Amino acid sequence: MGRWSTLMADVFLQWLNFPYHKSWLDLGCGTGALSEAISNSCKPDRLSCVDTSSEFLSKAKEKNLPKTDFYIGSSSNIPISDNTFDIVVSGLALNFFPDIISAFSEMKRVVKPGGTIAAYVWDYSGKMEFLRLFWDTVREIDTEGYKFDEGVRFPICNTEQLHQIFEEADLIDVESSYLDIATVFKNFDDFWNPFLGGQGPAPSYLALLSPETQEQLKSAIQKKMPIEFDGLIKLKARAIAIQGQLKS
Image 1 (tube, rainbow, N blue to C red):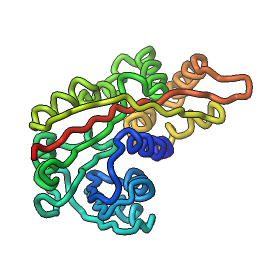
Image 2 (cartoon, one colour):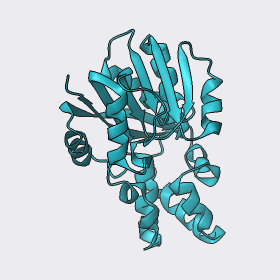
Image 3 (cartoon, helix red, strand yellow):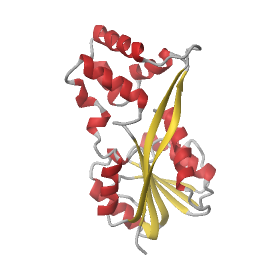
């Protein structure tokens, strides 16, 4: 998902259209795809990056972003003082926070009065077309496979649920939008191979299958694939973006 995460970070920031020279927190920053986009596009006066993984933070530090600091921390324990940031963002991480109520309490604590909290998540059950091709085909050959599907595992990843969470957190002026990017694969192998050795629910599920069942699944997906005359496969990936403001 890494190559698509970078593209989506830019689209999210264009939608957010936040002013230059502000203080930012990237919560659940991972290896720094969104952090790098913020640094490149938003001219932050300060950018703080928090993640539970020291390995991910090491990767993010390698980007050598100016005016940026890094912290080991979690969504329920942000190691930064109250009322510090103009905006707190989370990119493709909200659905991995173990306690969403605690996470919003912490985000509200570190953002300034009148500040912004914003996030985006993949639209797993909707227009994540390359994942839907995978999981919808899995359901045809394995009645238990749906349990691994992100669209089932992460019910938070839909507009109605996100609005409810933001509004229950007492944020105001909540608004959301669908954000789309093109996911272009050079050929079927370019589509399929990341499932064989990558991280995440789909590769983990695939690794549990016998070689014969893997081949059956691969063949069934390939038959459905909209492969163009030059071999390219052009699909859509969609995220749901949402933002709200803390009361002044």
